[in-house]
Image (cartoon, rainbow, N blue to C red; front, side, top):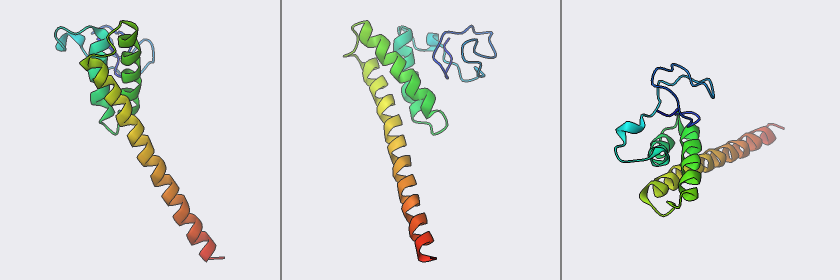
Length: 117
């Protein structure tokens, strides 16, 4: 099993990750991804998490870790690596949308403040 927060291996009996200290209720069991090694399982898990607004950061970290491992193993052209890249891209899109929202909010706030002066 792997921690869904930091991606490090954990025991199935662990309630908290011994590496990052977070609850492992959302841990991923690599045995559910039959025929996949750890990096491939992390890639798909990272991609799934990156689609969630609550776990996007964890998804990004898992996707990046999985992609690094897959590329170092010479598997950078496979489907799992593509899933990891999609997880990274999803996170970056979410952050870009948030940044645009903050800029628009700032412009509106400045225009309101300047109209009151």
